[in-house]
Image (cartoon, rainbow, N blue to C red; front, side, top):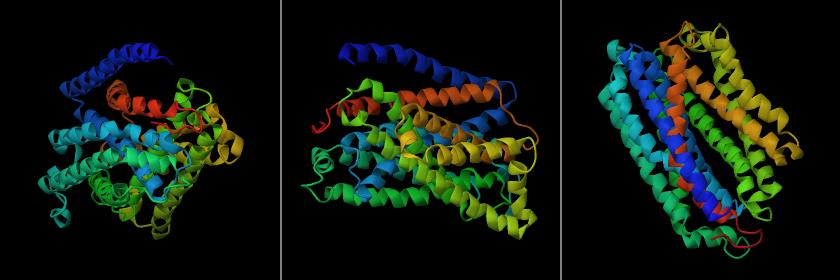
Length: 389
C-alpha cells in the first residue's frame, strides 16, 4: 500500500469512528434520560471490562514474550501485541465515569453488607481500583517505551548474537506481569463479583484476567489476518508460520481458560451450597441466561479447541481469523453474562441501548489504536530476513 493510499484510508475511516463514538455517547445519555439508567450502566461496565481488559491483556502478552525470550515473530510480533496499548489511558479515564453510576451499579451502596463494609465501600473501592489502574497505565506506557527502543529491537532481531533483552525490559516485564495479576484480580472482585455481594470465589480474579489475556491473543490473531493484505507477500509478517504460532497460543490459552472455569465450577457443584450455587445456576441452568452462558463455552473453548487442533487450520487466514473473531464475541458475551444477571436477573436486556454503547466503545478503541497499527505496519512490511526498523 502506498503512502497516499494509507493516508486516504485513514482520512476515510476517521469520520466513521468519530460518528460511532458520538452514537455511543448519545445512546448512553438517551438511555439515562428515558429512565433506563440500569441498562446504560450495565452496558458501560461490560464494555469497559472488555475493551480495557483486552488492551491490557495484549500488553501483557508482549511482556510474556520477553519473559519467555520468544523471538519467533521478530519485531512485528511485539508491535502487534503492543498495538492495542493506545486504549489504556482512555480506559483509565472512562473507569472514573463509574463513580457517577455507583448507586445504580453496586447494590451494596444502598444495601450495605455489614461484614463486607470495611472492604465494600465506595471511597475505598474507587481509591484502590483507581490507584491500581493508574499504576498499570503508567507501568504499561513505560514498558511500551522501553520495548520500542533501538537496543530492544536489536535483541529481537538478533537471536544468535544477543542473549538477553536490555535491562530495562528485563525489569519491567516481570513487574508488569505481577502487577497485572494483582490489579486485575482486584478489579474482578470489585467490578464483577461485588455485584452479587453474597457470592465469593477466590479463583474469580484469576479467571477474569485469564479471559482478557486470551482476548488479547485472539485480537492479535484476528488483526494479523486482517493486516496480511497490507504488507508485501515476502515479508515475515505474511508468513504462514506467524499465523501458526499465534494459532498455537490461541489454542493453548483457550484450554487454560476452560481449565480455570472448571476448577471454579467443580467445588461449587460438589459443595452444593446455596450461597455459592445461586450465582452459577441462573447463568448455566436456567433460561433465559443459560443459552448465553453455554455459548461462551462453545465460542471461547470448543471452537478453538476442535478447529485449531491441526496445523493447517492455524495457518489458514480465513479459519484462524474466524475462530479469533468468534472467540472475542464469546468473551464479550461472557462478561455480559457475569455482570448483567446480577442487576437484571429475569430478562436479557439487549437492544438499541447496549448496541449503541458497544459501538461507541469499539469506535473509541479502534481510534485509539490506529497509531499502534501504523507502527506495526512500518516494521511488518520489511522483507523476510531484513531487520525491521
